[in-house]
Each structure stands twice: as structure tokens, then as C-alpha cells.
Amino acid sequence: MMQQSANSEVVAVRGYKNFQVATLVALRIFIGWHFFYEGLAKLLNQYWTSAGYLADSQWWFKGLFLSIATSPSTLAVVDFLNVWGLILIGLGLMLGLFSRAATIAGIVLLALYWIVAPPFVGYTYAMPAEGSYLVVNKVLIELTALCVLLAFPTSRVFGLDRLVLDRLMFWKRNPEPTPQRQAHA
Image (cartoon, rainbow, N blue to C red; front, top):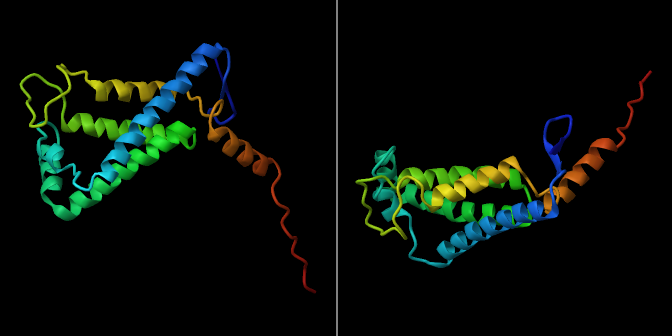
């Protein structure tokens, strides 16, 4: 059972056993590590680009992805956003800092990856897949795991969000006094 505040945001995981909370925290940290490492590997590889991946698209928005892949300036922006998005999403999830935003951003990014290269029958891609998939692949599984983390957040139990939210709540309860204006006669 989740305890909810007046604004309907989950403030703590209550009623769960330590093992359940630890498993959710581990899931958040491991997915965060995966995002962070993927971003870092791309950042450190001076030859990495998403051009081939985008140009290979065969499904929805195929034309859009191909136009991004063939426009050097647009591709540079997309590559920059992809690399730093992965790194920042990963850090947010690992540290439990702004983890709701990181989780939502991760879901959006993974949905885009899946839309670019869905594992459908009859679709073949230049880059070989790790295994044989039909509709459900590792991208979709990780996306679903992030949806679980969105539904059952743990960063307020184990993460920096707890410190940030405690600080914000303190400031909200104890606002700085405002100087009163004196009437000029």
C-alpha cells in the first residue's frame, strides 16, 4: 500500500517488505547503470553516431528518422541529446535524484528506440540483433520495467529525492519573512 500526500504524489513505500523495496531499488539502479554506461560508451567513442540506426528504420516515422540521419546538423543535435540524455537519465536513476523525470525521459527514449527498430516479422536490419525477437525485445522489457518504477517509486525511500523533497517541504513550511511595507505619510 502506498501512502499518498494531499497532492496525490507517493511519499513513501509502506506495507512492502524490505526485500520488495530492495528489489525495486536494485532495478532502478541497474537500469540507471545501463543508461549511464550506454551514454558514456557513446560519448567516449569519437566515431559513434546514430545515423545507421536511424537510416535503417522501417516502421512509423521512417521518413522522419531517415531525414535526421541524412542531415548532418540535425544528426549532431540528435546524437548530442541521445548521449547526454542517456547519461543524465542514468545518473538520475542511479542516484534517485529527479527520478520521476528521469524515469519518464527513459520511457520516452526507449519508446523511440523501439519505434525506430521494432522486432516485427519481415523486418530485417543492417545491424544484427542480439537474439531472435517477435514484438517483445530487450528495449520493450526495459521500458516496461521503467513503467513499474514509475508506478512504484523508491527514490524517496532510498535516493537523493528524499533529501531534496525534505528540503523543499522545509522551505514550504518555513517561508522567509517578507519585509512589510511602511506607509509613507
